[in-house]
Image (tube, rainbow, N blue to C red; front, side, top):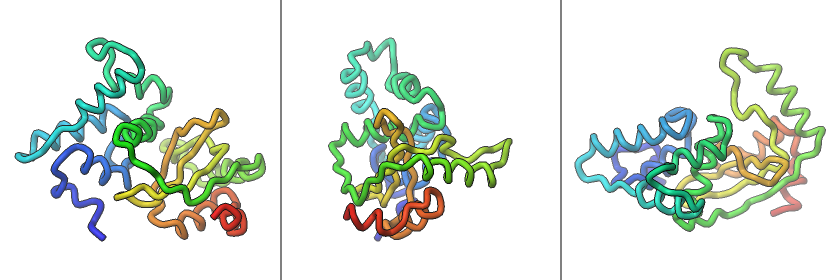
Length: 193
């Protein structure tokens, strides 16, 4: 397996974005800083293809807005409402644009008790000045394998809209993490596999 964080081998925006996705929280806190990373990388590297303009046209056409008046970043930011959720929403649209099919490994509708457990657990370890994300426990958690990336947990809200994602590497690590955070036991995942 190649090192997903070997940024220098990226020859275009999409390759770089796949590598950033593994730990996007380390590299960009919101959509504008992510765009800055892409722009900076494209200026620093000689043989590099920018794919983001094609994606931008796709998203503005999809939302039926004037691309000269509203950028793809504005669309994502408006939809996210919170800066912390901009990049996962961006990746949702990017996957649609690239026609990337995720392999669903499991999906669980969390009970109120499971959500409450995560909230209380988060509060017990939270740094008030730098709270960890996401602040809102999901209503549904979906384990997916993203081709060329890794296994991620997708967080869905009460309206079944994805608002956050987290890379866990592989399915076993995701299950261990889900048990700690939400008290989701192995049996719940096995029924779905």
